Image (cartoon, rainbow over all chains, first blue to last red):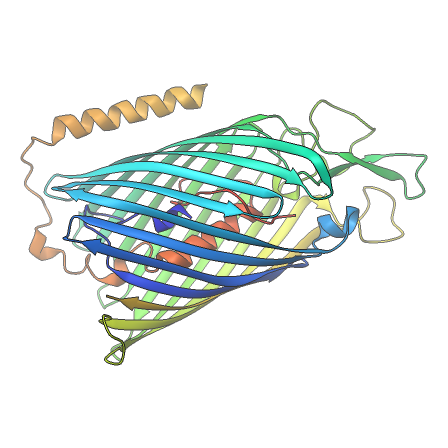
Length: 368
Length: 79
């Protein structure tokens, strides 16, 4: 959650001192994830701002991948992170560390960033570097342990174009090396000896991947007090996945302390070179995957939110508070991943898979 | 490899611009006193970092493409 780390979209200024307490929920495709999250950020002497976060995901999964080849499970993921930003003149320097732990996956990420204002503070240019190191184990197999290393470089440009228009351009390149797959997922292949016409084998992904992503965002202040946002992003990687998305948002505040927000997002991607829903035979090729996240599919999101600002005379040290509720509806439509839970159909004739999901974020924010 | 070279070139360009332009006196075409609209909280790309980070994480776990969205980190519970 490096988003927690980025101090400002368009200027070298320290972020506001604030406390956020959130309940989050995700439900869709047989998967339920919910839990609390806390983020605290505090500045000292207008020079340094430190932050810390804690998040819990309580996961209950009977997703199509689990139903097809395993049995329903529950688990918990905890994430904590901390970091600091140091402001020196027009230069901001940041560092962070984040740890995420599940019973079968531990992920660590640490990074540095530096950004500088130019041209009368109209331009902000930044570079960042982060490194990740993960350890993957498999429940029920004490001999299984794999590693994954990750390095990421980023460049960002924020530009004030007019008194009402901001743009932001980000480029990231990430190289990953190690165990780049799920420890559980399998591939499906035609098997005339099997009663249902197919069997499963463990998936095998390449052990290196390099990704590139570039995004452009614009924010415009309307003639009345409201803003519109647009985003376009493009992604490619060495596995053959080519993806893009667009997003539009609208924020409308009201005089009595309420702010409403609407957004629409559309995403689509092509499948990886070694992906197939149904391979022609066992060990058909060197690398094989049936991860639906590596298939050809699209995602659509329609979301909205409402925030209400209130005074906090009853709360010491706090200047004001805000209650927020955001709800997003997501639709996933797969073009090359079939629903194997459909019975009585020949292999490869099953209907294409798709599902709806709802994401809820309910949180209180307090400014110090 | 091509991506690495591109990254290094971009980083070098970024450093070059940073070093070369910091001493230039460019008159800003939007003066500081004209930026009150831009300073409005509704003009923030991420009004609430905790909630923006969470929805980005949802996309990272469910989609095959991450990067350039100002968010990263591993672990997902995505089986």
